Length: 174
Image 1 (cartoon, rainbow, N blue to C red):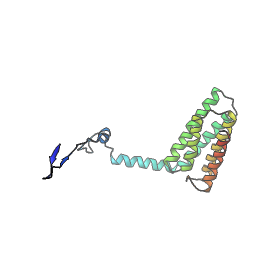
Image 2: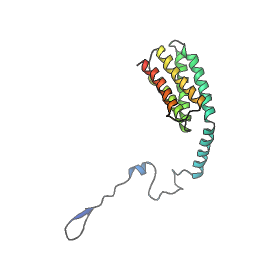
Image 3: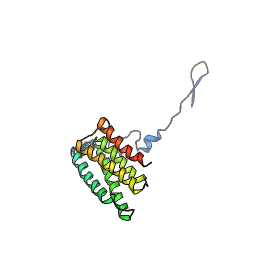
Image 4: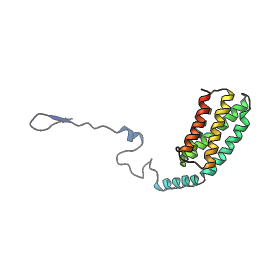
C-alpha cells in the first residue's frame, strides 16, 4: 500500500507482517490468561518450590547415584565384551545421565560436567576394553572426588586438576 507523502512525490509503503513465531507458540493478539497455553503463576511457584526442595537434597541424591554408578562399573570393569557388559554399560550411561541432570539443575556444575562427559563417552565410543577401563575409571574417580569434597563450581585449581586427569586418560587412547 502506497501513500503520497507530500509535494515531493515520495511514497511510503507499509507492510503488515504476521509474526509466525508467536502464532506457533499459541500466542494470539488479544491473548488472555483464560485461554489455552497460559501457565498459572501458582503452578510455576509450586514447581519452583519442588525444585528448591530437591536441590536441598542434591548432594545425597548425587551420592546415591554415584554408589549405583560405582557398583555397575565394578561389575562391568573386568567383564569381556558380552551382552552382560553391554547391559551394565547402559546402567552406567543412564546413571551418569541422572547425575548430570540433577547436578546441572541444582548448580553442581563440576559434577554435571564429568557426568555428561562420561555419559557421552559411553554413548559414542567403541574403544578396546583397556581404554574403557582407564577412561571410565578416571570419570568415576573425578566424580567421587567432586562429591566427597563438595565441589560445585566448574572452575578453580581443584576443578582444573580433575579435568586435566580425565583429559590425560582420554588422550592416552586417541
